[in-house]
Amino acid sequence: MTRNAADADDACQEAFTKAYRALGGFKIGAPFRPWLLRIVTNEARNRIRSNRRHENLRLRAVSSIHVSESDPADWVLIDEARRHLLEAVEELPSQDREIIAYRYFLELPVSETAAALSIAEGTVKSRLARALERLSDRLIEEEQA
Image (cartoon, rainbow, N blue to C red):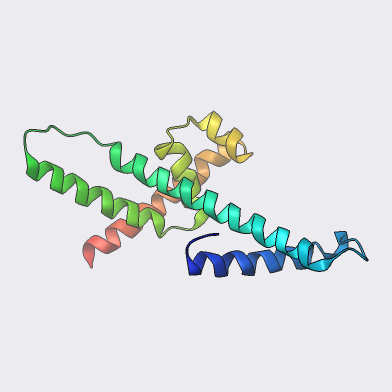
């Protein structure tokens, strides 16, 4: 389903963890295999959706910077900078990637980001500040290396 062995492994591992936690809700006497396979299938679908969202965010980030068409060298430099920035964002913890994606790649205002993540606006601001600081630190470390 995932078309990627690593994603399939991750989906199975996460599904077994979820199944273990949900054992209390399993109906005694019901067939176990279909119940477990339903959990695995749902987790695989979640992975596929998540990968699509990440790819869409990546494409939006790449297309968000505009430069003049006059100098091809500008395009090369901008493309390299985009790739470098996206790689640095992808290396951040998931919570940092998520808040940066909502706020900057999806261009949601703080209020909508807060609603989408079910957190307070102040929490959005503080998490975003910390995420951007970590991103900045990572970029500076890479630049100095």
